[in-house]
Length: 256
Length: 221
Image (cartoon, rainbow over all chains, first blue to last red; front, side, top):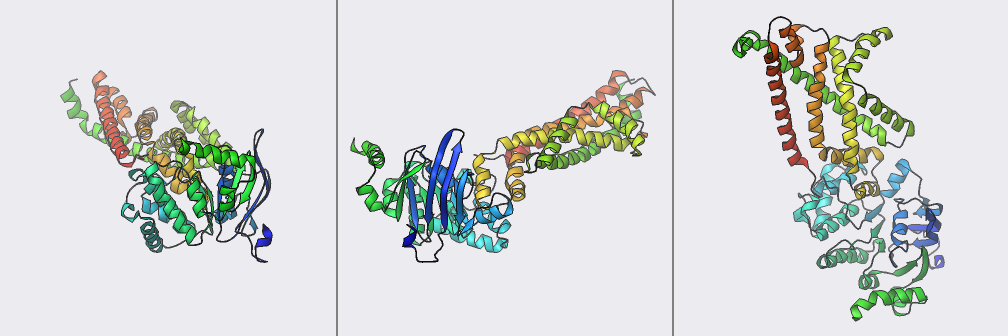
């Protein structure tokens, strides 16, 4: 894979031989992966395959046992301020939105830009309103998260991550906690980001979306990367039996 | 002694005592709250010796009777060449003991915080202290208004320790004033009853304030 990059082009995210255990369970087995600038990588796989864990190791919400993770060529520090600084460059969107429950949407947006990036409140507020406008929830800015629908909360959460001007975005099953009618509005926002060239790693169960938005699909099972291919190749001719079985299993309901 | 006789003779003293109880309660509660927050931050911080110290502090002051604490402050501290006024001894005891309970309430308040809130703060690049100050403590406080209200009442009752040290009449609080009156006149149980009514009224007022604040700041989820 590496040969495809022009020489000297450092991947935004790079994992080298990453291993992780939960007790006896080997959840990540020798994972190597690199994501270059502007690339959209979608990770799919059955539940328990380690895809969420993999996504969360990238900004060290999960620690790893061995291997190396580099952000723009810099190894992730263990703890402390340098880790916080590196995390601030990677946006993260969670399954459960995780907007700060005690603050208005607007305050959610400006907290990190003001306290981490040291922007002025005024500047942060202007940027926040612009981003909320863009994801279509500007009229909810003064409300508390609990007063918004799930789809609105998730769009606000994406805007909150964007307010840090991240080099890359991680999406950990961003639509799994949403009612079906709200999934589309969130996926549209993510699709727009992809079209604008944002570097992204997306863990999702939405196969049509994965096919449409990704440059590369990673199929995980049992803590390993089983298959890695373009979306067209993966979805039309999966090469491993496990991927065939997985795609079969998720297509069955539609066939019924 | 009738109620009217009691109040006409000692009404001013009761009023002064009520104000003293309020003043001591407010002062000690603010002190307990400040120390409680600091100790709680120590108990969850990444530095192990500080965590151990915080836990130790809470165990000590949560498990010491107020009277024993007061005896230590009044009789033992002078041997260490630390001389506090009697009133200051009462204040120190009425700050330290409630501060331990304040920290316990905050710890249980923190347990109600969804782990995703912490992860979001870390993912945005907030440092530990920013996360504590802007996300953890504010949410813990909002979910512990009612226990903190009980703590305010408890702090008020703890200030009755002041009745156990010699104070000037104008320093007496609601319990001390009963001792004072009954050692000079036959106030009997009525002298207690007047203080009891004032304690209960204050507790109801605190409870009402607490419930009002709780309705305003409670986190919707």
